[in-house]
Length: 134
Image (cartoon, rainbow, N blue to C red; front, side, top):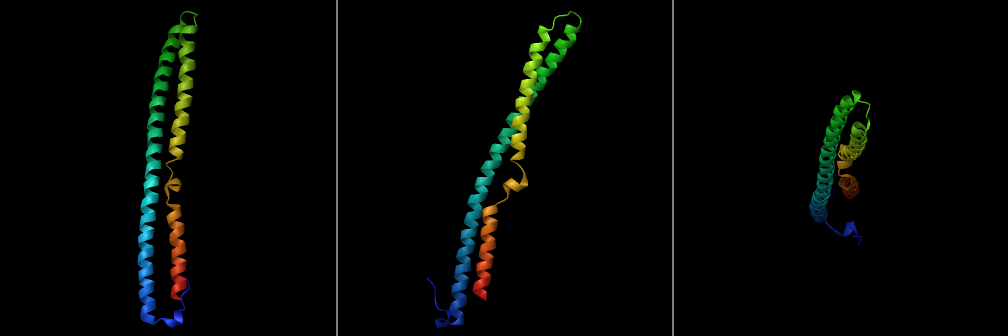
């Protein structure tokens, strides 16, 4: 609803502007709170993925160490089966851990955690207030 500004006194216009700005600030604070809650939940999931990835990577490293031990042991007799199986399993586990770790760390970048909707809304609000003041 457009109000003819010429019908209101300057004091009434400033009073309306003050009330509108206070309401706008309250809404922006609520938007920021909701958006940051979402970002924190995303960060928690990413941290969990990093932790799981690190645990899987550690398990793979332990299997690879076992394969190395078995490989050295197998250098003496010509048998390859005792070390080949743990080596293959270890490489697969390390690959899975690497993928999990990489995915989690990519989700923890500052760019992904930035409250973009709030920043855009604040920019629009600033422009609106500047237009009202003119």
